[in-house]
Length: 369
Image 1 (cartoon, helix red, strand yellow):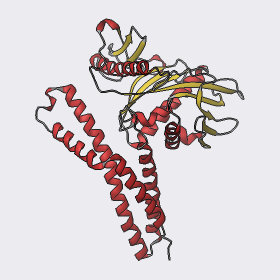
Image 2 (cartoon, rainbow, N blue to C red):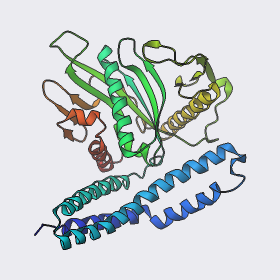
Image 3 (tube, rainbow, N blue to C red):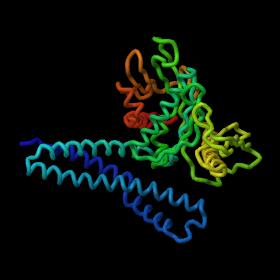
Image 4 (cartoon, helix red, strand yellow):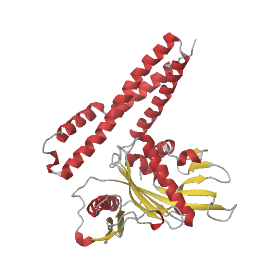
């Protein structure tokens, strides 16, 4: 007789699901989704392109959130049926399938449970992630590119749309900086705990054989705001430079000056975009990110906080929040939460959920300043 005694785990899973459902307020979420659906179906929706984009973006996020909840509830119901069928047929393969599905459901529940802790003002917004190479020369540039791939792989594994908006390539290898957007519900809330200085220790593939190299990269995460009149940017406050988009090694990938760099003169904030095909599109995307950064700066000044959201990140010794050690041993350790993993390859391939969950719980438990 096969062993199918999953009753305690299933009961715990259903209890967790009920708590999540209550926190999310599924009835309210469904009503908001329906209301947005009606607005999106209006025949005159695209008469105002900006308003239409806000409606469709909000609808997409609400639908994705509602779908995760309803599909999970259905999976729990289907699991009961699968277990009963396996028990009646005394089928070992069906029993193994049920065990795998239960483990998968528990993982999804853990992810959703972490999301219920995200109650910050901007936690439900898409995220704009900027990575800059720091101290460490060519190794730091290579490390910055490794981190970019890590976060894009994390997004891919979760089915989150990701768009690389701008990349500045280093001369020998790697990148000087990159900016990309992850457009998913709670993307900022999840990734905001990744902001800080990341440190890599390894045998350098670029230096003398047998010599360990320490290098650093800074990760900045900001929420992507909706276009808003809350931050008005006079034309006199910005300088707009246009240039040709380029690829690795400075190779031109565009024969027209479509890339845009906007400098906000009063604050010195610089935003570059080269992902879109036209200069107009790149300028619009750059202005949106600039608006997001200036709004955060305003909020920080009003609240008199030093590192409230994006923070000040030096990407050098004494400021690191996570270490990736590849030699003389293998380990990735978060220095704030003490969470660690012994397989750096999996982490660099996007296996970040445990670090993100630990970071969110750590932040929630910290005393309010």
